[in-house]
Figure: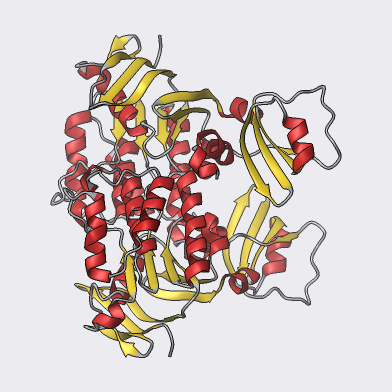
Length: 289
Length: 289
């Protein structure tokens, strides 16, 4: 099978199971979103795919070959991790060289162009950078390594709005030019939705949604109006969340509406965006109070 | 004068001037936003207000008293900083006690309630937390200290969408109940706009906007339509940014439109949101290319 295939992954930290029965496929030439709450297991999953940590059960293959201790396969994947693995006393321009030693063929010209666009001085030491600029440096490296599969864990952490827009543009531009595959884990769902083709939503260590963005959004509805009429209309449907304001109620439905039911004049049906859908799919009971 | 008064602040790091001629007033009982690009000087300004670092010129007073070496004044301010100042090997519940030693009267009951809402186990060590949960712990402390002025530097760094919504609700709720003053520095402008009353925008170390959110937004316009008609309509006005898509042009105007000019049928005038306005006010020339 082409691409990265994740099969039956389980991971425990001590007594806690952080990933369970995770199956998914990352096909070449797409932009994927890996979405989940704080603590859902996103970073652990990305680290397992990139062979940085090992699962208790399950396998990762790339184009049918196991990734475990397979340098050729691993050389095709690059993980930008949330952790800062660089030496704090190293100058940024020297760190680019270190990346080339590990991955080969680093695109210095593009890196220098990006540094200028993001107003990043490559003569600085990594340890002197703010959170935002640490992310920017790691992003630049991710866009310039020759790997085919680029895994980005929280790429826009600490970036201002202008820099986030710039990054999304550069990533899509890079994707169109190179046909690389990107897997992005992010908490800023609304602003990245248009750049994503396919999403995985992970909740408590399990994949609960795996589909093209368009297909997923097509199944989501927000039904709102007077509480009684809304409740009648959504009875028996898959209501995943609810908002209330006085007597007005909004029910989030995921799945199908019942085409036999007549929509009362006082009730409206809208399409929620991906962030609203995500919040409702992943909220805990405590938070709904 | 009541509240915190920042007067004539200048700060240099080596040869670089990071803050220049900064004057502003933080009045009691309001929620302020301090907005700026990566590297604009926000964190430096908050650290100077909280007396963590010292300016090269200028003064900070609280209710007319200088803040410098003034324990009583400093006890009324709390800065949640982006840096992690806690010992990594300390358990969270013990860190709450440390805060009480410094600030007195810590609201433990509220802290335990918040920890439950955010699904944070206070028996963990600080060093074991992810970026998101480090922010959550620091937020909880900020909401439970008895200080009157709460300065929050990047409070939602790494928080998922549900946790961000929860924090905004808790902060506004806390504000209504206690009448405390909040100053929030954040890059997620769009989602916090409704919680803010007054904003400061800082660019290259200088305050360029200081006003109530409503007044600032009232001065912002997006004029769009065929390039030629738009250019004619906005000629001589304060155009701060431009978007182009083929022959269609959008000009962001900040200030006043000319009421004498007739708006052609093909041209529309809309109100941009605060994030779009911010991006246009603070973009560099390179980014507009």
